[in-house]
Amino acid sequence: MTITANYEVLHETGHVPVKSWTRGVAFDDNSKQQLLNMAQMPFIHKWIAVMPDVHLGKGATIGSVIPTIGAVIPAAVGVDLGCGMMAAKTTLKASDLPDSLEALRSKIERAVPHGRGSNETLRNRRDPGSWGQPPEDVLAKWLALSEGFQRLCEKHPFLKNTNNLNHLGTLGTGNHFIEVCLDETQTVWVMLHSGSRGVGNAIGSHFIEQAKKDMERWFINLPDKDLAYIPEGSEHFRDYVEAVGWAQDFAQANREVMMARTLQAIREVLPMPFSADVEAVNCHHNYIRREHHYGQDVWVTRKGAVSARAGEMGIIPGSMGAKSFIVRGLGNAESFCSCSHGAGRVMSRTEAKRRVSLDEHKLAVAGVECRVDEAVIDETPSAYKPIDKVMAAQSDLVEIVHTLKQVLCVKG
Image (cartoon, rainbow, N blue to C red; front, side):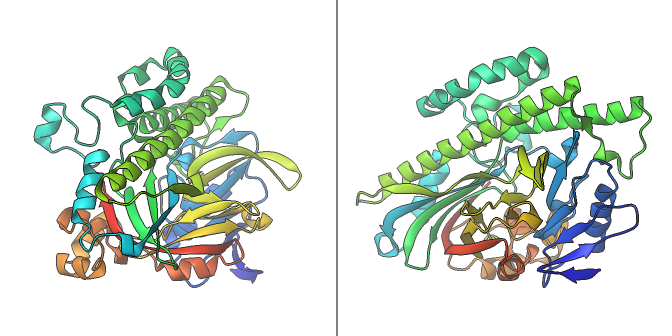
């Protein structure tokens, strides 16, 4: 491994280079091997860019930017299609918040369905993470998406069984969250993280399996079966791009509904009027997009990475209890104008629950109004890389505009 500029180059004979912005942060051997497997694919354009939050994923490494010509790899995009962030800066100050934020957290939790049901609720087909009856604002947002969804259903009837209307405007589980944060001037921000929910999962899973079947039918051997790809120009390719595009629109609309409902919840708790502006956009970090790099139009897959074109605003959240950042892209061509999407895991969810005690977790999230129980230990800060080191490793990709620290966190 040699160091060039602000990244390291991982290279083996017969591979395109892998350029990694990982100096000072963990970059495990399994992730390196997964990236080298990806680098064997014949349609990679120039190299693969690796962000400092890199960690092992399914098929493709989370925290990677994969430019391709003539094909896309569905598993590299994943199943949480369009997953991303949204942040709004309010006119509120820390002094406007009550001493206890418990009532505010409860109000937000009632305004935005989140989490998953128990075995009993699932047997009764009741999911607390979805709407029993979608409210008017959700139905209104759905109207803009419904025509595209009907077209998808004509090609893919299985999508009719997805719970997408009841999932629109809901948070989901895992590392998805809604936070109230303070910046360096004690200004209040609202930030949230979610994606395309069940319908995105259904679309992604369908095309991953379709690509694998095509590889078998064409007798194509791969270094990893999850690298199964769809050639551009094929019927499956057109269908995939259309479906992913719609799922990304759904994910964006999902975040817009949740942000509006969260801000309304705050207005119902706080006595003073305030305004809120979406400062740091509504940015995806699991998606594909047609872009122009190094003289050619290519498909760029960002799996756990954010677009960071010159002047483009983005969000890099830390873990539960850690700092987060509103950033401005520097347009670094070497990274295909990208940056990390967060801190990146250093422990699996199972390992975190095994290694971290509830007392340790309580200490790590002290000062944050949030759930503190066994079910969220897999999201504890020590399960993630130190966010300050992650930011230092990508100082040539983005500049920090605001530093946020959460005071309230709602987890799925």
